[in-house]
Image (cartoon, helix red, strand yellow):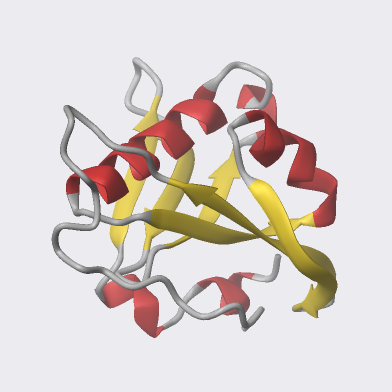
Length: 131
């Protein structure tokens, strides 16, 4: 994705995750927006297939759980839907274009934790609009 497409107003309010190697070299990233959207998930090519992406996603979902979200969603590049499916996400709606790349919206419901219903802070999920 072009770098100029990566920066937006959500960067100021999102929770950001940075995965680093033991030498402190950045190897992956992701973010959770206040509306429950996970985005900007990326892992350096040489680190793909090592579990870094799954750990980033688990951390973001755990943060959403702690914040009381009932669900999270993302816009997955169609070639990455298998990765998100393995993490429990389910596709919703048609394929759409985002910055010239085919995407599909995917959603993951967040279950109860420690017997307490999530959603206690009443975070509402962004409507089913691909944008």
